[in-house]
Image (tube, rainbow, N blue to C red; front, side, top):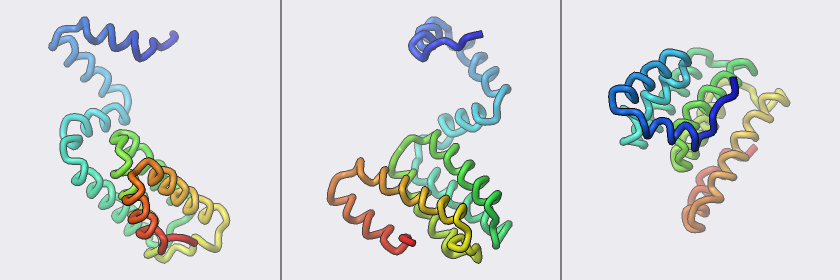
Amino acid sequence: MKAASIAELKKGLVRLDQGELLEACLRLARFKKDNKELLTYLLFLSDNEQAYANLLCEEIDEQFSLTPNAHKKTLRKVIRNMDRCLRFSGMKETEIQVRIHFCRALKASDTPFDRSKVMLNMYTGQLKKIRKAIETFHPDLQHDLRYEIRDLEV
């Protein structure tokens, strides 16, 4: 089965009444964990973006505390989880805050990421994503944010 386009889905959803729309959302949430997490974000967390960013930072801290000397696999898992949650938000401010927190947490941990080329590439990849997100801001904010991430450079 070929999936419909976003425009076609939008037209179909507009035709549904409130009960049918609610049933469709609940049925969608049953099939994938990502769908359920997205609905949780949209219903309960999207109105307070700062609290959502803080929640993601706490999750990163928790994951680092579980494995103080992280391996490549652990870092990949943390980054994958972080990327998925940041995709729900779509806000660059949240993305920058969480990615900077990740980099600081990794530097503060006992993980010797600079000795492994793979882990160093994961770290520098996060710095590249931060720099790319910073480019979308006003030049004054760009300067402030670049100053903030200067100590993260390897």
